[in-house]
Length: 244
Image (tube, rainbow, N blue to C red; front, side):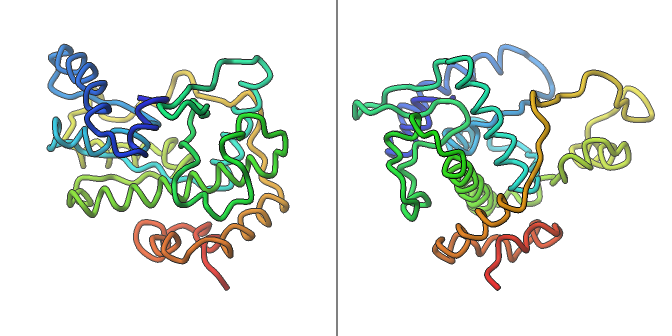
């Protein structure tokens, strides 16, 4: 659901998104399982509303992580993709090129305050500017998350995890399984197994903080309102997203 579906979501061509998603629905139902679990970075970028049409009883997990770390991790991934010249562009119906992996189109309203030609974002070499684009993307996605939960009254069906801390906490994960009424095969959550690690350590610098601070003062206040409510108020880093 990356690439064109993200473009179609932005241009309001939901029927095109739905046509692609129906193939996914067929695969999901083909599993014939009592419970289907999926992690998907494209959910809020392209098909969340469409998914509700087919799976209105869905429950959700909201992973929250310091936005500075999220953006830096995505920047590291973006640089790696560039290094190997991975085909990370696609052509929209308007004939222009857009970045495919883990990115919005750049036409979203949140990006309007950036002094940057988003059509040429795939040619950017200024890592500071790319980092700010990724920060903007995180803010946009979190706003979409709250809008989704509000619109479909899903707050009671959503479990929030503090990443990475909660992912390594057996008690928290056990509580999450109980929340979703899922029965464990063992009395405890087994945390053994392969851990996902980035190709490069995620190191946040003072300059990164200044880049976010710069954006916070540029953004319309409407984008920052969500950080005054649950679950964000429970996180120390949310202070980075308020104007002093």
